[in-house]
Length: 106
Image 1 (cartoon, rainbow, N blue to C red):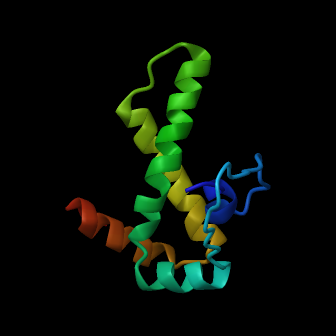
Image 2: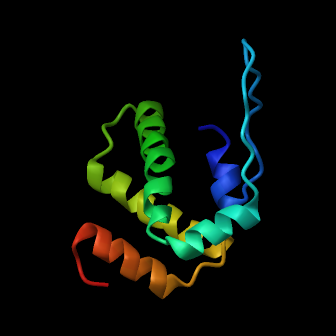
C-alpha cells in the first residue's frame, strides 16, 4: 500500500509513485472507506499499524536510537484517533470495537 497517510488522514501527499512495470491501481473513495469504517471501526487500528510502525522505524533510524514497541503503539493510538476524526466515525464505537479486539475494556 502507498499513499496511506493521505488516504487515512487526509494529509497532503509527500511522494509520487511511478511503476516500473505495468500495474493495476485500485482507488478507494473516502465515502467507501467511511462506510467500511463505520461498519467495522476496529479496522482503524489495523490500518494504522503499518504506517505507525514505519514512522517509528524511520524516526529511530534518523535519530540512530532504537524505538520501543510501546512508542510505536502510542503512534498507532494517535493515528487511530486521527482516522476516527477524518472519517467521522463515532469514537465510542471505535473504542468498543478496538477493546473487544484487544480483549480489554473500553
